Length: 372
Ligand SMILES: Cc1cc2nc3c(=O)[nH]c(=O)nc-3n(C[C@H](O)[C@H](O)[C@H](O)COP(=O)(O)O)c2cc1C
Image: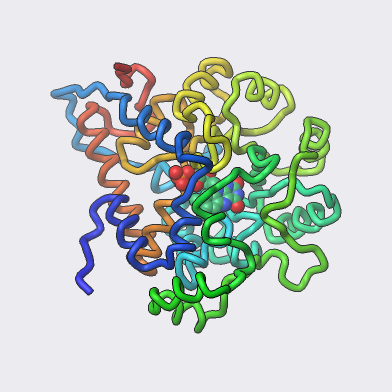
């Protein structure tokens, strides 16, 4: 069938929607509640304006970034996502290869569909491990020691999921891992034969970090027991860098800094948790102002263009991550989709820098933002 050229992230979303069963598309694309958190954040990002400057000689532009002092080819990486192989066979591996090529991190979810050892190998070391709190401490310890042995240096603890947000689009399809295939799902899969046949040929995606071990993973389990005591214990236990993901509140951010974490990832989980959450792009600015320059802040949620990426830097981020667009790119445009996405966002960032009269991401400052 005629394929729309991949020019914007929205092209990838549309292509993915055609290709994926509705249950899978709605799992990836969906958000909490009525989608207000996601929408509000997109609106705030759209409202922010950038100051364009002229006659600055912007011939020597670079889209390179820096992460914990090390150079990256692009100023954005891949946020942790569970069950990426639902987008198509070997999606995780394509993501890992993107990370290797661009020297940016792929964050490997606890709920990944490829074992964490394989991911860091394919990413040539450019992988971070993302942990969810679990009441079973021995299961978490098992994962941590596997991550250490595999060579992970950065651990991301996701803290915005004391309970999984209510996501109506998932609930209506009866989305569960592993799949429960009833008549409704059967029809959905039958209507997307290309996806179904290739998924069948490669074997249904599984929660690969738990295959063969005694512990299992329940994505709907309560994580309500996570608290500041747990954070202290984890800080003592993990000798590498510790990033705390899913923070929106200034008081929490200040306390996390005091607890000695290495970085905070400001995020609303892509609007998938609290529907009434404040827009993370505004939280980022407030947290940067409270914590001052020098403390490492990352950002994800709702980034869809190169201009969005530049805006996140201007609001205080030291590095930016994208989630859904990577899965949509691979679902819609196959194995090369991630690199196409990287290239198009890189070009958009470069164009944006030119218009702002600067040559690199590290020249982006808060004074380049114009609020309405
Ligand atoms: C399908 C999907 C699965 C996700 N799984 C995880 C996960 O396992 N761990 C985690 O910390 N965040 C997870 N997230 C949240 C992302 O890491 C990230 O915060 C979010 O996708 C960013 O928003 P964006 O998709 O608008 O870029 C997931 C997001 C999606 C879309």
